[in-house]
Amino acid sequence: MNRRHFLTASAFAGTWCLLSPRARALGANEDLRVAVIGFNSRGKAHIDSLLKAKGARLVALCDADSAVLDKTADELAKKGTVVAKYGDYRKLCESKEVDAVVIATPNHTHTLIAMTAAANGKHVYVEKPVSHNVWEGRQLAEAQAKYKVNIHHGFQRRSETCWEDALEWLKEGQIGRMTLARGFCYKPRPSIGKIGAPAKPPATVDYDLWSGPRELLPVKRTKFHYDWHWQFPYGNGDLGNQGPHQLDVCRWAIGDPALPKAVLSVGGRVGYEDDGDWANTQLVWLDYDPVPVLFEVRGLPKKGVDYKSGSDAFKGESIGNVIECEGGWLAGGHSAGCEVFDKDGKVVKEFKGTKSHMQEWIDAVHSGKQRSIHSAESGHLSAALAHIGNISWRTGADAPMDKIRSAFADPAKEAIDRLAKHLEANGVDPAKTPLKLGAALAVDAKAERFTGPGAEAANALLKGDYRKGFELPL
Image (cartoon, rainbow, N blue to C red; front, side, top):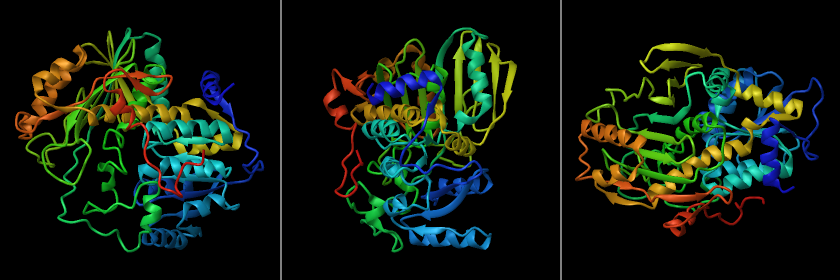
């Protein structure tokens, strides 16, 4: 049985046994020794979660920015938690004093660090998206089978009992057949600014380590940290930043399939001119049968490019999901709860409850078993939805709104009409600032490659380039 067949077969069993000969066996009452890699943003929350968790102990920190590293280590020491400090993730992964790592670095290093840790027998919690491109996501999924360690993705909804219970209830046909899975990222994002000439990275940043597999490119953003999200070499835009959370719920709702048979996207970076590359306004159609997925990104606010005006919402959701059925819909967002509505918009059932996603990982490491919905395979497939949506967009061309509308299937046309009104409310004229209509791409889900018209250009974006010394440990 090859690794991919192992992963697929294991998913039906619900749990995987994780018996790595390189991972240190834990005693019955022994804490998992955990290091956090990258904590200038999301990693801070992971540190807090680890300090509250049972069965784990924070023992080390690693960051390519020495100022961030020293500041966080000093703050922890004042509260009674003394940690080892590392600048180089490779040395940390080789340490015999660490059993597991939590990774919250920039996207372009997620898979590289996760696979390096796994190759050294370390269990891994890796933030979304687990990959920067489709190819490396598949390598990560296969690494879990190869090294037999726990690789746990950062899709926290998977530990919310409200969603699990609600989706099971829907699948029983309680409000009829499921017809469409929607995801939303209506998250206003101001301009990242525009610099006249390339800047230097902060003096405290080891730019070689920070860049990792990417070339040592000139810095072309005013804010070094975080705003890498909107540039091609490092981030994946909001479709690949916030989007994977809601795309994961969509995929979960329709039965956790592999990739869709086709993808089509439209979008643009509108409302301002800055040093960002990725679209801040985007719509993605994922052609699953029988239930398709429709995802929307809106980086502009409700109106007038006024960020005090708030964000748009669809059926009450701005950052969340709406799962439509013949007799109503299920809706939920960030809060630990979701609601079922009938066709008239009346709430007919509520689901509440959540668990710590971090604790789920720690408990799974101790037990030697992992639920397949938390695996690298699951994380890869949900992240890949963002990647193929972005690839469609990147390989497209500017188009007028009437051509854009006619390119999409009927359920998406209404979303295109709402998008046009959203742009108008923000003073964006698509006739003067046209959106890019992505390539309509057919997908070979088994091979995880594109076929047919446009495939050559699209397939070239499935894999990144890896600088010498920072190749994936295959």
